[in-house]
Length: 158
Image (tube, rainbow, N blue to C red; front, side, top):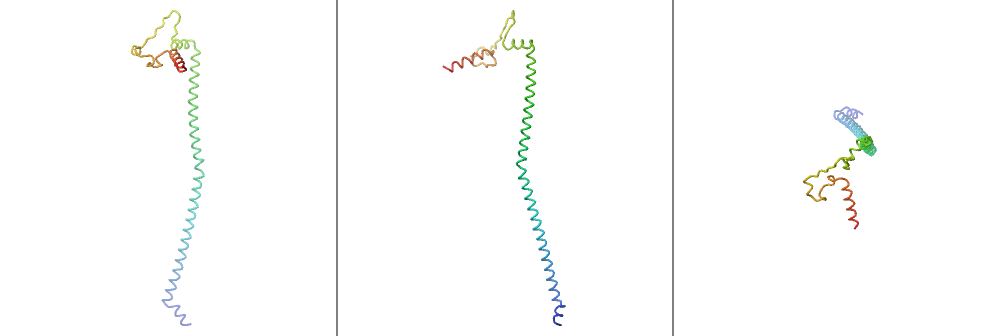
């Protein structure tokens, strides 16, 4: 037993025991650290999976929401334009209810004259030398355009 006690207290034995204990502690701390790292990596992977799932799950509804908001804005703009057009048409209707305005428009558009008046149509000297087909339809009275349309359709049937 004396030999074992001596080996137990020898410097080499003590150093070897300290080395083994240190190695065991280092090994335990490394495995704990690796376990923590793997746990964090697993948690991070799970978190990333959850975030990606949420993004994928919300992508289509968000696209639909944005699309519907754009449609609503377009319809609102169309509604405003229609409202302005209705107001304009109401104004025009009110104007046409006035006999003086209606008379003025008839005289201007249809070239009517009152009994006792003499009607004159001034022709542009530059346009007078050109053939009728070259002049724009806006430069002629409406009835000339109507008759030209009738003549063209009649010629197309033949």
